[in-house]
Image (cartoon, rainbow, N blue to C red; front, side, top):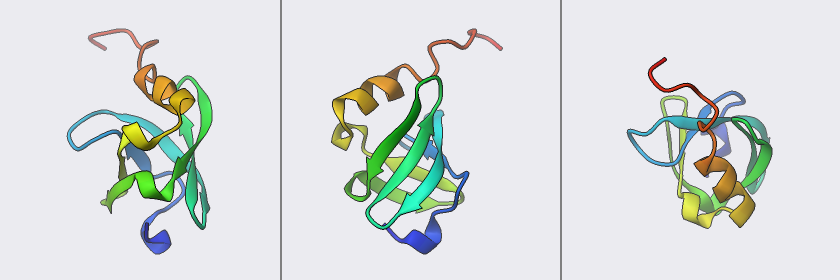
Length: 83
């Protein structure tokens, strides 16, 4: 992960072309602290980052902790469909 390419507030995605599940809150040497919608903060290890571009961080969700994986899966569960 190139620290210079990541900014506070960048949106975090579980893949290209899918809806963001959170945003970067802190940048640490080997991990990111991300606010996951509806769940709070989670640690994203640098090894889980697939790409960084255009203010977007794409991660491999399978490399996150089990709790973080559940939080990502539920990130949009409280939203009303069609809005």
